[in-house]
Length: 100
Image (cartoon, one colour):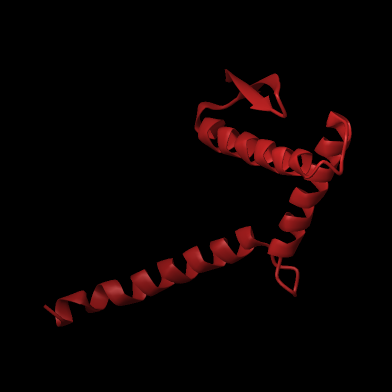
């Protein structure tokens, strides 16, 4: 584990993370910070806690919209596509010598 310092909404946060999670956590922090800044810029919402809640709601709404109509998540679709690609590779590999 390593310590990562993030800046969100003008405040610093120290969190522990695995080294392989570092880049993704930094990107997430930038995304949350951008959401909060966009809400702050409208001038309609005052207070850091209210801005954070509004940003959380927007991000949750985006996440929910990512699911397809039958409720399958993007992660499940990615897994299925990887499985299909592996199946196609396994079926096509024996045929490669036929097409030099």
